[in-house]
Amino acid sequence: MIKSQIRTILAATFILSLLFLVSCESDESEESLVYVGPWIPGWPQLGHDGEPYESDRFIVYSNFSSFETKVETSEYAESIIDEVLEVFEVTWDDYRFVASQSNKKIVIFSDHDQRLESGGLAYRDGVIIRALHSPLYEQNYTLHRWKRTLKHELTHVNEFLLIGDNNYRLANTVWFREGIANYISENQSVSELSHLEVWQEKMKDVSGGGNPIGIKVWGDFPQSQINANAEWEYYAFFELGIRYLLDSKGNGSTISDVKSFYEELGNGISVAIAFENNFGLSLNTFEAQYWDLMTDYLSN
Image (cartoon, rainbow, N blue to C red; front, top):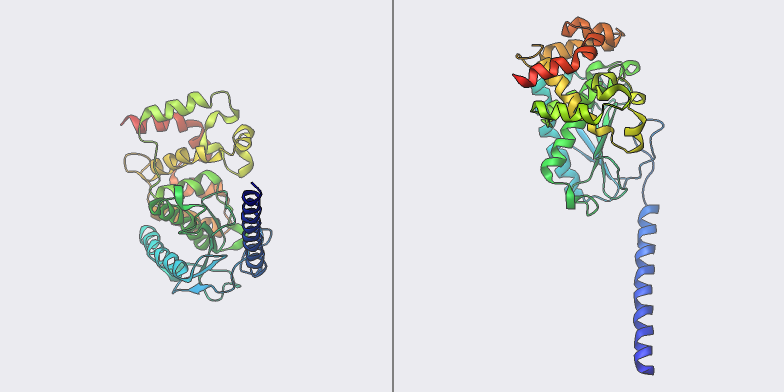
């Protein structure tokens, strides 16, 4: 009995010692991170290992991703940005970086274990994304989904860099910015009229009635969606609006019109005027007629 108790005590002591060592190693790892980097002012401080990997057009930082993972991340990014450039029919030289980005490279922060709530975030010259091969994320984050997320975020960066002027980088509406990012990353989930009807029924008593074109700034999301962290539910209908604008069976506009729209925003033209100049209808009209236009579009 006593021997059994002694063995139990020794085993417990051994386990506690291991936990203590792991805790110390974790603390030391956290303390070794460098909290200086090319992040935008006001964003959470992101600690990295001080050893970024540079490819032709990207700099990849991470907290605890391996060197091989940083290389892999940059390789995917190089391929994906080529796809984005091809769709928009622009070249890397068309991008207008801010003066502080004298190296003219896009920054990627590969978050290994800081538990990024969303799949990715984009800012003026960079992307924060969940790391490949992170045990915190990989169990329900496939490579296909990760690449689609990176393409979505790089489409945001593409927009910022084509607008150019940092003062107007957020001049666009939220619905257009998120809609074009989902469109380019082929994240399209509304394909039938029933999808639209279910959404209208669900949102009939919510402020704005679920009309995606009413989401011009982040504060326009209904409070109920914000409280539930469900703003993302609008994204499918943002994308539907963009798909309609760029489909020959819809509004019949083109990517060239999108580029011209960005250029006008970068020149200080209001989003309402730039939208009407390039898509042939006013924002107010598009919002007022959204349900009818999408019903006809999906019906055909």
